[in-house]
Amino acid sequence: MSESVITVGNWLQAFFTIVLVSAVFKDNPLYRFAEHTYVGLYAGYGVALTYFNYIRQNVTKGLMTDGEWSLLIPIIIGVLIYTRYIKSISWLSRYTICFQLGIGSGYVLAKDFKPFFVDQVRATFLPLWGSGDWWVDVSNWVYVIGTVCSLVYFLFTIQKKGVQGKVSLVGRYTMMVAFGAAFGNTVMARVSLFLGRMQFLLGDWLHLIK
Amino acid sequence: MWEKLANIDRRWLYALMIFVIALALIKPIGLAIVPSADTQKVYDIVEQLPPGSIVWMGMEFSAGGIPELMPAILSMIRQGWKDGRDLRFVCAGMWQMAGDMAEQAFSTVKAEFPDKEYGVDWVNIGYKPGGEVLLQQYQNSIIETAQGVDFYGNDLNTLPLMKEFTSLKQAKLVAIFCTGTPGEKEYIKHVTSPNNIPLIEAAISVSIPECMPLVQAGQIKGLVAGMKGAAEYEVLVGAPGSATAGMDAQSFSHALIIVFMILGNIGYVLTKNKKQAS
Image 1 (tube, each protein chain N blue to C red):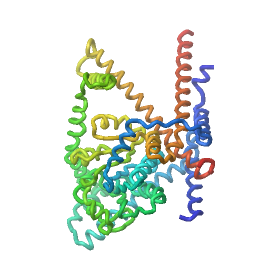
Image 2: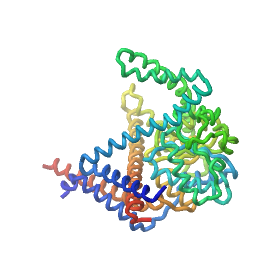
Image 3: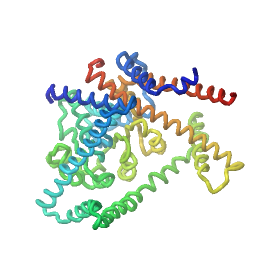
Image 4: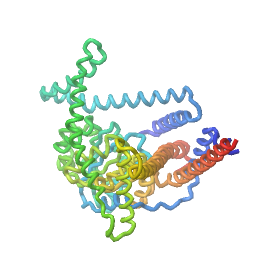
């Protein structure tokens, strides 16, 4: 790619970065422009990519050249969703939605049970002593107690009094620790995102860092 | 004073944060980066692959994930290609920018390995619509599922690597780079769990708490956690890059946030006590 194209690209990137970050100081028309540009570009890019890399491939090669007429079935089901825009025949779009819901519940959910329930429960069967490393033993105790107490917290059909109340409280504190860790990771992620932009601004744009 | 501190205009805090980050990037002091156990596991898993093994790279992220995930991808490619290890990579994804991310990664690293050839050492299939159903279909036939073309429009049947690698099940390792859904859960349920293929992941920091139960259960064998994990991976591979350069800034910005939180909480408690007393 030529130097001038890269330079124009860098200046555009810098402009949009600064304008989008300016929203934290004050909402302004430039920010709105950048926000709409981003949303429009991303949506347009997705449509273009899907059309040129997939739809056109299927329709021109698969349907018209190779004569795979069975492709008409998914094409018609897919096109039916756009009938939502025509009030008199919008009921036809329900077929597409039903098809997608059927895929979602039948095909996708059926595969969720083993990896995200059975395997996860099995992972809580941990040795509480005799592992040879005291730190592992302590960690396993924390893990098992935290898991059980957190699950007890969600037994809403029993009043949180007495033993159940105290166990629920331990569960609540466990979850608060987990949420704190999640918050810390979220902060780290947002700082990392901003860091990436700062590295671009100071490096590729202003050449202040290598 | 504490009331003023508790009600300080947040724009001053943002300005201070930008100043600290910029200063740390321009004048880094080189804080030590010690690889964590999780990153070390990822490194070891890739290191133990036999030469010539085919690695499936799932590029499940868009431009927002570049600062945290791109350094990990570059490190993995460098690790796979250095010292004659000759790992081969097939890149694809369920996210729209999958092809662009793979293109950016390989065009960056390609200059360091001029003997590596597209179609022989790596293939970029790019994004294909279909979500997780795609992963299931890739296990039957990659070429058919990808409509016979890669990200650049090349016929996959003409690429030597794709003549050998016809199904996702043949991958020795699945390495995914995720910022959300679809992501690791889809790979676990459709690919790695049923076929017993090891899965390693580089995830953004926001996803780490969600991934840890999967790591603990052994469903994810190793995890590169955000930019920090990417920096650790760069140190292990011996090729410091943007993640390593950003660590000082990240550490100082976190320290600043901790200071804000402490001051804010002290201000809150003292003003609350003052209100109660009055």
